[in-house]
Amino acid sequence: MACAARSGGDGARNEPQWFVADGSRVVLGSEVRVDDGPGAYGVVVGVDPDHGMPVVELVSGPHAGQVRRLWPGQVLGLRSAR
Image (tube, rainbow, N blue to C red):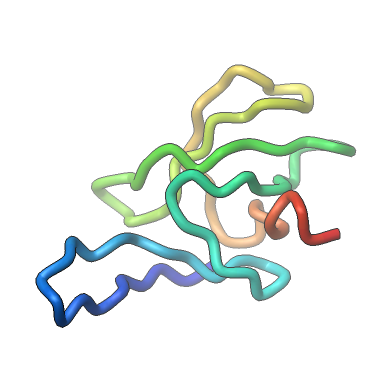
């Protein structure tokens, strides 16, 4: 998973984005499939300030309700991209 920032020549705030395991582009608010069991998914809710990785609130799966910083390979892709 790589983190990049959109360039905003118009003065707009740069929004974080990541390219995840299946090549999808993920941004804040994206629903993502995660490597946490069958059907597990979450929502990107922030950016870890120390590492730049996405912070995901897990919605389903064995750790539902937790908020976690996820590392490369843990985000499988967008929830809708199956």
